[in-house]
Image 1 (cartoon, rainbow, N blue to C red):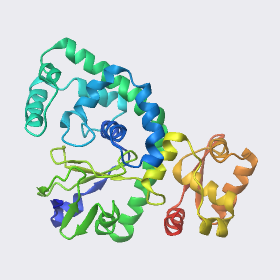
Image 2: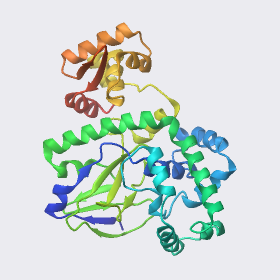
Image 3: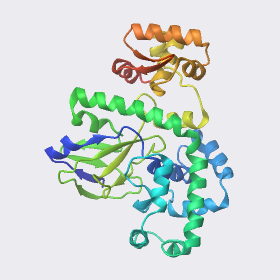
Image 4: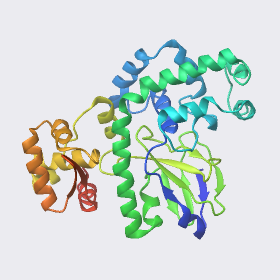
Length: 334
């Protein structure tokens, strides 16, 4: 049975699309992704390299965040902020909340012995703090600029879907076949097999883009000011392929149909801008592997076709894909 999120008209009106990923949710999902065995062809090498790079103290974080199952919600506050700000917020969680959430967690899965001392033992909390910062430095920090660029582009595309057809145009496209919109209920098939009912009661839902969350969504029914659910970035490309490219720095490859219309280099330039909103001409050239003059020429042609918008900031320029470009990329399956 799926997990069911029940909407009223007020909930649809108050449902929002987050403009950026949640750093701690993304870290939690990265830790899960490290420990699972799905998508071995694309992610096996990263899992091996990442595991080798982790210090043994990271085991405390892996104990807290297993490949599947319940995770205490204080590890992923719904507040906005930089990864460093939210890490600090996690580590300043009041003792009473940690105690209550660990007791709830123990009802769903066995916990390692050290966790019972986390609320009260300063040394255990210090070691967990060091483990959490180390895990963030290893698994998330190197990729964070790329993740924020991709999620910003995805959020812009979802906003365009919202403008063209309302929230009922957005919800069915979040994560098929994991997420099904059967008005007025959003049915979510959880990787853990969890089922249940969440009545939003006029609060609406926050839709949070995720690069590491390529499989089952994460749902936090207790998030404030409204419950949240994650969805995978990647309408133009497979989410797993996109994650692979983030981890290994690959330049996106345009589909044959798009390359046939625009030419391979120009299509690749368009994809690069869509995946790096606000990039300069120099950054664009570096990401595609062409000269800056050539990147400028291709950008001008795409701008003339209504596929790019370029803003000048002093001597710098910032390129962004237009709504028409996102629609073209989505239609071409790139």
